[in-house]
Length: 376
Image (cartoon, rainbow, N blue to C red; front, side, top):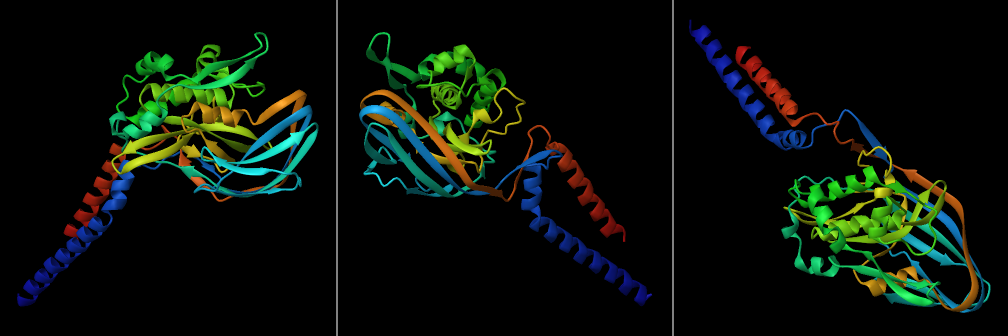
């Protein structure tokens, strides 16, 4: 009988130890379990390259009669890019640092040719934000910097005069943006609604020449290039009190490098303000899977971010100034290599397992293990 009691006591002690170990393991695994519930796995996903190393030659040819200055914005290094630019032209130039950008300024006369070699590495970034706050959590200083009109100056050949046109116009979009986002409760939801409106209702046009159309004209027309679609997005975001701006640079597409523009904005969270990127041209006019929302692909070189100042915006667009006639500007790009490596896997929205299902499965597993320990 004594042996039976000892055996029974040993079983109880063993179960107590097993339960204690199980509870300890459960406690250790709580962050992982919490992560599964908050970010359930997806049964459908896609992958983007993690980084790209590149080298290419950019040849600028200008045919003109007269004296003029060519101002080229040179990329600055940041957390997403490490880029060097070598000038093979042997032409006189000034290096100017203004408006948070570096400019190589070439005083030229008549026909000219500039040859530059770009080399470096760019990184991809995916923002996974789940705790967005509303607009009132954004600093007032940033709102003052961005939440207003911006304009470009162009020459009206019919009237033979310079005309100022508002291209970013939050005031014109205030009513429509407010109506479209009336059910959204935070900044992230509002940004996604704007993204959906543009991607689902606009078409991409890449052959437009001259200065970009205004946001209002683009909205009424229903199509636009990267600059114009960015103007629409930025105007709508600013109309809701969300600071947003256009970022300019080069993008690798269809085997070459071309000028490109995309959107920068901010999302306030419980852990602070997060700067993010959005690119409506990634899937505008096609199936909306969110491939351009809070994703910065490893395919672009940033040259400059709009700082909310129209004078600075005009300076970026009017990169040729002077007194000339019959000017013809062309660019040729020779790619030496563009190697994309690594992989970032991104779940496709709408294909994630429901949180309640994850919680149910986990609860069943925990209860089953607990029963096994008790019974055996």
